[in-house]
Length: 103
Image (cartoon, rainbow, N blue to C red; front, side, top):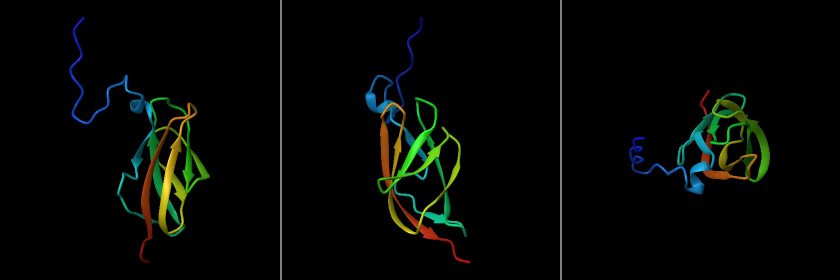
């Protein structure tokens, strides 16, 4: 059996516990978002565990997100802390600024 090539720089090895943490596809860390007229933004997240992810906004349950599918989530303007939780208890957190699109 041939050995696998090394991981790309910055890519976590599968045996590292953090490699199984969920990730935000949208928004990305440091990305500012603009809500639509109904106050919705698109959130997309993925997990090595598969299955739905729970989205917390500022510590409160806001939505259940399907794995790796874009989902519209209602967020008020301002800075928010978004946290993803997997069924297995893994999590990821980021902070983003939600703005309002001009009319």
